[in-house]
Image (cartoon, rainbow, N blue to C red; front, side):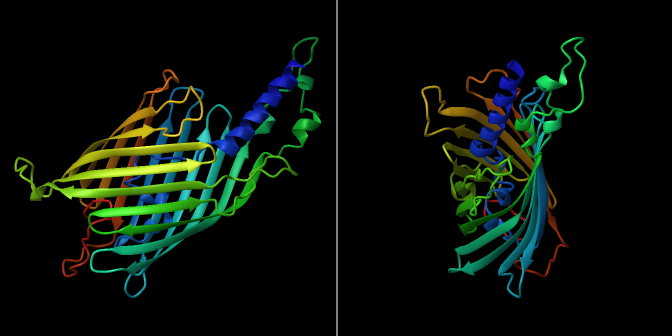
Length: 341
């Protein structure tokens, strides 16, 4: 019957979304690198916290809202370790789907020499996925005589679906960084948790690989004297792969204290079909630093054939926790992705 066929398509689509879709990706990953790699936890010599909100394809039924919040700081006599907490929340308007995950994070730092440091990180926590199957309208709920809607369905295909999933998740990362450059790699979902909506199915959450890096070039050492002092050019790149999906973001920004302005290109380097697009979006971003607070905004301009998606908006706020210490020579340090704190 028609309604059963629609139900089948819907449930199949949900399964595809859960198995194949990428993890949430933020355009401003360089301002909130904790969302990519747990090894960034504790890289400042003081507490650090922030949050970011992403609204994808607003004003449409396909709208997806994502929030990520974190707090971390160094511990140990030499601040060689870091501890943190992260919270991820994602929800889809059309499907009424919601995903929440809370992780604890630990990192350990090794000083290789006076310039370079190596940091290892691991995070673990619990995820919760919720899909409200009770909102579906099925064939046996419709009275064919007058069109009225009856109570719940007795369709066994629906009764076997759970509306909620809880799972344990583990991720890890490594970071090599100095005052001017950083290179990192992370691998999420190491234990491949089962995220199937049915009781007896096994649908593993695919591994998410990220290779990322950045470099800060000071213009003080160049002949471009018309720029203010302490002006930097920031270069950044981030390659991500999950199952058959892949993405490469790369871009540049001009850091003129207290502002940063830049552009990032989002690409699909390993197209899987003739309909794949190499360039999927051009992402403009900017930020302003006020004391220990950094406010950021980005807008992704769609360049694919998806139509009028209304773009993607991101708002971020990060800040340093703790009092300034004028007698501590190492308190205001350069963050590994080029920001001064």
